Amino acid sequence: MTTPATMTVTHTLAGSEPGDARGRAPLEPPASPRAVPEALLRGARGLCPACGAGRLFSSYLKVSPYCPDCDEELYHHRADDAPPYATILLVGHIVVPLMVLVEEMYRPEVWVHLVLWLPLTLALCLSLLPPLKGMLVNLQWALRMHGFDPQSAEREGPPDGVVPVVRAVRPIR
Image 1 (tube, rainbow, N blue to C red):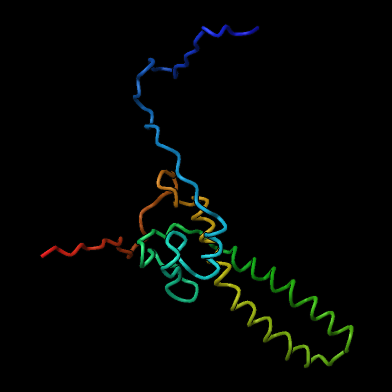
Image 2 (cartoon, one colour):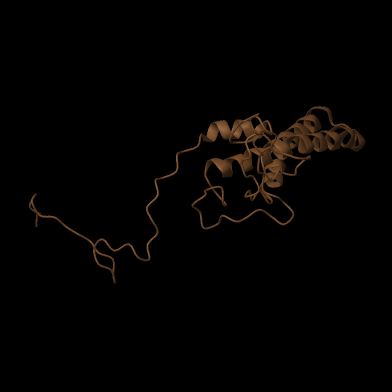
């Protein structure tokens, strides 16, 4: 059965009349997309996903609650255990093939393996962990995950002890 071109179809919500907006959230425009590749590159360099100028970390792996340059809220991130897992995966794929290659080609003593692979593994883990965490935090920002979307139900206030950044404007004299 086809619908004639002049026929109009109206839908009403159960319990409301047409035009009645009670109980419904106002329609807000969709959020503008954020560039994922740019956010990932900024995260690998430890920079703010929004402005690319402020530092993402306040210490080795501690994410700043706010960007010091643009005041972007960064405390919404949920990096948890993903950066260590990604680091273990990457380092394992680098070190294990090299270890097998050296063993098959040279058959060194066990102490040589320990001297070679333990420092290399430690250095790779410590150097890859901050960029991977930065990339994950910035990916969450770019995809508006875990409260990075102002319209999200997951959005929460700053953690205890963190004061929201309010920049004072100098009076004009």
